[in-house]
Image 1 (cartoon, one colour):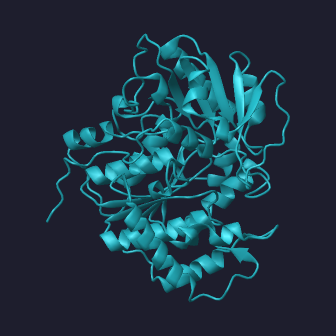
Image 2: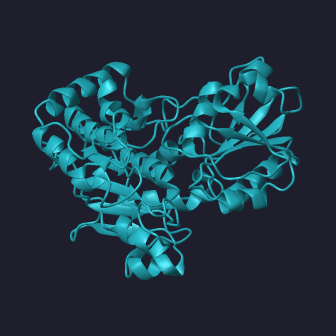
Length: 418
């Protein structure tokens, strides 16, 4: 696993990812022209949901689909999946060795580094070739043309909602950020977008919009809250991939109904407070009386997302005992503070060097380090606890409670041609 993080760990201040060197690596591995059509997902929020639903649709259509998302939730294995299932440790170790041998052929790094997300993207395309994938779904790590997904010409691009995130890195305004993300699309790509702000729409121009209901999927097969639009976008984009035929309705329903989205309005029991294994089915449970501490976990990073998550919790529980939140400086902390003016709040700071936590917090909030998040500490907060923030944090919490993240959808009923 060292190969994925080696150059990142050794990077010097001011260094950035080296897309040119990543292209050279992909060339050594002979994957710059993938053997399968590529669907690329870019945007500021909802990329993982769009990628998951696109992949589930393609699997229901009888295709073997390799999906690359970033970051992993409980394990780096989850960054690369085939038909919704995470690769095994042995498969990931093999991919690491393949990358290591190819990197050894390249000149040593000069003024940049091979980024972890980019290396997982390249490894995912290598794995797609190894397993004979019929389609590849790539989620951009952060940008568009500046991300390693740009190395693999997409047949279809899905653009989830774009807002002012990573300002100063991808651009200084939503319009500049949108232009950078749109840059992943070549002239031959079909581009679809979720509804956007007027500023972003002005940049995207005549790009096809997928409005509410535009995915053509029954509402009961879609996630709740803000994730619904991204799910519909994913399905609509999958339908436009070359060679895809509409799956039988019953089979599509079966596969989409099995989709789970850990960390996106997902519900979990804390193991130490419950006599049974932590349940997880991706849908809101009934509020069963008892002593178990139940979590609603959502990777909301702005005021709008946080408001939606709190509303979802209140619909099920009627009240919230505590909120645990983790937002690095570049997320919408002001929006979070405005929405979290009610229940007690604990703010968690992660130890990752690329995330900064320097902004002032409300005086009434408790502040703890990541290692303070344990089953016992979560149980002490009450029976109804909402967990919000960056996916690095929600992934940590999912690991603490032993959430099921190995598989995002089930394809057992899919019958592929021999």
